[in-house]
Amino acid sequence: MAEKMVETAVPGGRHETDVIIIGAGPVGLFAVFELGLLGIRARVVDILERPGGQCIELYPEKPILDIPAIKSISGEQLTSQLLDQIEPFGAQFHLNEMAISVDKTDEGKWRISTDMGTTIDAPVICIAAGGGSFQPKKPPIPGVDDYEGSSVFFAVREREKFRDKTIVIAGGGDSALDWTINLEPIAKKITLVHRRPDFRAAPDSVEKMQALADAGKIDLRITQIKGLKGDNGQIEAVETETKEGEQLDITCDTVLAFYGLTMKLGPIAEFGLYLEENRIAVDTEKFESSVPGIFCIGDMAYYPGKLKLILSGFHESALMSHGAFHYVFPDKKLKFQHTTSAKDLQAKAG
Image 1 (tube, rainbow, N blue to C red):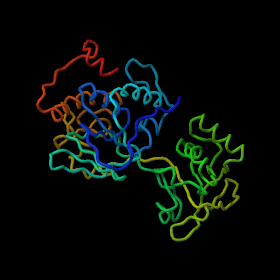
Image 2 (spheres, one colour):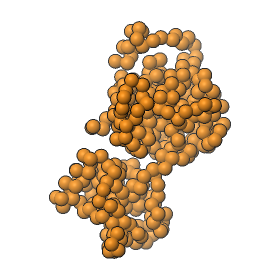
Image 3 (tube, one colour):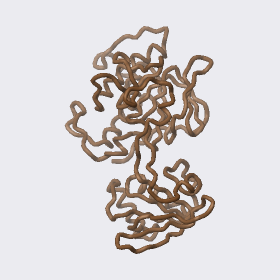
Image 4 (cartoon, rainbow, N blue to C red):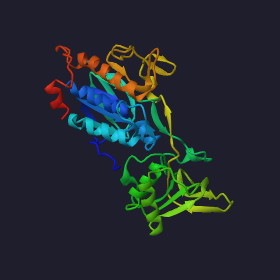
């Protein structure tokens, strides 16, 4: 299935909206829909480079069996259909960005700042960050910290930064193969390193990567990185060793290491919210946190009887949206309507 394109904002700058959603997983995406039905605008911030959260990063092809009325659906299909559903509401996405701080403005709104210099003001924040922010796993390579951020990277924020570079890409998943394919036209040379000949990426990506290797446009090495060579933060070569014990140094000036992701509460832990079991405690009427105007839905939300299910998050999205309405439109009365009979809701949903 082709990846759905979303409107992604350029990093940096100041923006305003009605609700800032932190997390672009299925629950965060459905929240855009529920908010949109009530005439509430949203911007979505996510540290990953595409929407979908755990569904895309951890099990894009595994079947999900507990979405009502759908016998079986993959994480990728669910994400794609949710993006279709919210398209009429024009939500803007701030991808590849992490929300690092939250403050109150002089006007009484919330201001989220990201690690890419973006600020967004809104009367409501909705945290839908699953188990927390996904953060890249660092490879267990001695001395890797000495090169991090200068010549070793765990994510690609700016594609042009790697133009004319001699790159070693390490990993066998979607990110490793996607960036092998996407950087090949602009890099001086790319060597893809993976410890085994089997890849976890989408079959189409594996085929494209293999075609590049067969054509001599990239080097493919079935080996494992054991060490790094270089001085003052600049990589000169990676030391590798095959399963058979053959050692080889691969010359490069840049390493992109994609060894998977780990979930951490991250900067959200510093937002001043009351936590239970390292999750955000909420009420079950509006899914509002201990701080007025900050809501939490999905796996990150804690309340008695909580089930970490996508369908539970969808229910939480609807109630959160009704709670958010009173902050966004304090002078309006919320009229409950069914989409089956309300023509104005049908029109909003396209």
